[in-house]
Image 1: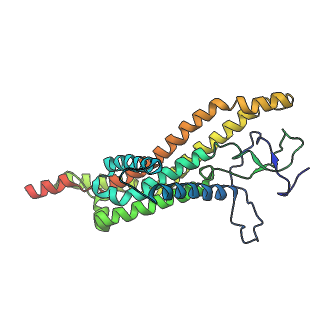
Image 2: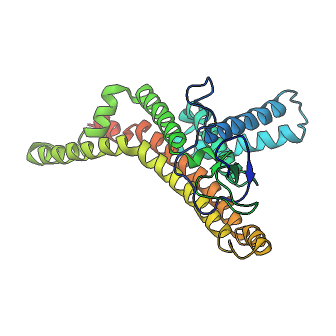
Image 3: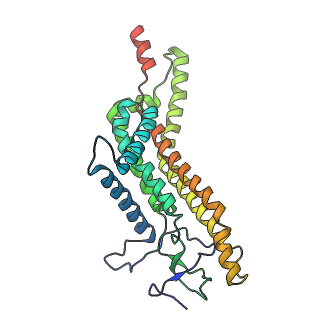
Length: 294
């Protein structure tokens, strides 16, 4: 019976995916902070940086394959971001939004590679059997709530910086709580009270945005892990041959679904961040025009 990290096993994780990352080293050691999701996060970061370096190291007027692919991705993403936040904010927001999309997409798809989430250590009774104590060596970072919270907080901080830079503190307060419509008298007071209440709701919505962003991403990727491992486990105990064939054939259709889910979740996360920036950095031009007209 295996009970330590000294003897690895190479078997499916039978529908028992931990909701938390597992430490790879002793907590008291120098590398105690590294978990299986941290390890994959570093791998994803290395892959993205390596490809970016390869594509931009020797750029030419006639682009080579890596440069051409990289330019296509960046130009396409920049066009989408610019269409949402505007040309001015796109220059400031794209470094964050483009990085978020690429990193989340690669992280989601990295979790579908053979061995990620299925090679690890734990109690085993045979080459095709694994107990609940199994700890995978590799875990996609977006299936770790700590990682998705970190991404959401980073997006929130950049959103706050861009908002204050564009409209200022007072402008943000007026934009959030200020009455619209230019009404005066009793109706103006009533409308002001309504917009004050709406502003409070808006502040609550802003505060919980990092929570909803992180949980949405984590929940979808973590659920995908469970689906794949559950399908791998359907024929467990039916003999070595059937167990092996079931662990390979049954999850296969769901891999295509998870490829789509991984792409959609990267789009949704980035799109929502873009919309948040657009909403808070847009000036109330109509109100200013009315004031100037009067």
